[in-house]
Image (cartoon, each protein chain N blue to C red):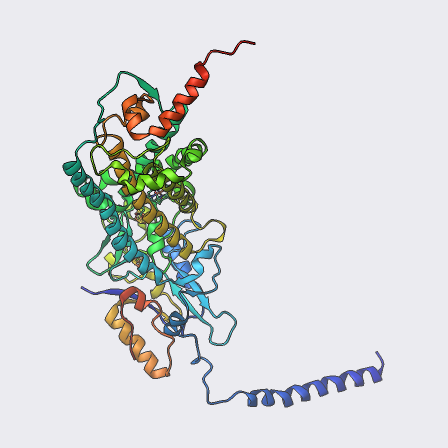
Length: 334
Length: 198
Ligand code: HEM
Ligand code: SF4
Ligand code: SF4
């Protein structure tokens, strides 16, 4: 390297040094010296006032750990131990109490004309299979679900902690796996019965007559399903779908980036809808068994008493009579 | 008896993660389970702070309230512990916990989370103090030996404080008065329904 090159390099180095020395105090002078940089920091109370929760950066793979504080956990605690249990008590005990009152005042709804000699097929084997698939799964889900909500207050004191854990562990698996037959039952049920459950003009008259439930001898006309049954059908379909969606979210916690707030919301919806549906189902079970003479046959053997059918589903009986007449009419001569 | 609490003085925490490592080592915590973690708020911005967080051993603990099998209990030192023999791994305690403390050995599909694990305040579990059975399930029981949680004991900057709530609150108050600033007793309002006023 030539002497000139050395000099040029040296000069550049000196100039750079001068520049740095000159610039540093200048940069420093831009900072107000009276402020302590450590003192101006994020404040917990300020963050909590501005945001629902405090999030930050973490160095571990578990992204949920990035949530530092979520005070809404406390709100969820209040929901789960307060609202949920109150609504549950009303849905179960309240509905049972109403049914007892109804039974005492109205009594069992009998076939006014008395049992006839003949029967008519109301639900075929597949319809009955779908009903009991869904119903069986529902009862299993309701009992194991209610155990999650109330078991520690009802069952735990009776059988002790070890046995209760064993029951709850089993119950949890039952709830988690029986949900699939339930969802299958919902789909089938929709396919076989949705057409018969579309609202129509007869429903208005049926509702105006109180379904004939309140007074003896009153029988508003109805097709295959009356307005009350339609309401039950649609609450099962819509409520069951909502339970399925939220239930699957609970089955796969935090899947596809769901947050803790999403999980809490899923549980709240799942819990409340399940309780409402349990209340509705208690009334459904009552009227389908002890509450009405001849009703259970429809889902047991599938064949109902003709007089029962004429009283409760008059239009449907006419439709069926028309159909069978069409079938049994002798074939016209060619 | 003392009312045990944790307090992380965020103005001192340097995010060295020694508390996290100490905890993992002391209790032989399995892979994927973090009883303690350090969270950095406003990362890379002015006023950034790091906070070491584990179970806060809450007053009126949300986890204990929502647990469907009631497997939690609170010790005389106000430490919130649970029984892994009774836990059914439902994951509800994680939804209720304001601090993300409960951990599960498995991911959780089809309700298979396994037994919940969380910070025990180095106080073990329901088994006999210092027994092998207790160690295997819950880790070391330092409290029974008269020692405080290891994370706080070996914090290099003495940012993480563990001990009687009144005493650590007093230490924090003195620090804030002396240095003239403090970002707050993180989590105290939510965990203990009170905060430290200076
Ligand atoms: C349709 C599919 C369903 C799925 C996938 C599902 C799933 C779940 C899951 C994962 C939980 C959380 C508890 C646990 O892990 O065991 C749960 C709770 C619960 N489920 Fe379901 N479920 C379904 C349907 C139902 C139905 C039909 C009912 C009621 C009739 C019901 C009632 C409940 C109740 C009461 C709880 C407890 C709520 C609480 O106390 O927090 N579920 N369900
Ligand atoms: S911090 Fe979470 S796990 Fe610990 S006592 Fe509070 S709610 Fe329970
Ligand atoms: S995961 Fe275990 S400790 Fe947590 S709420 Fe469920 S049963 Fe209780």
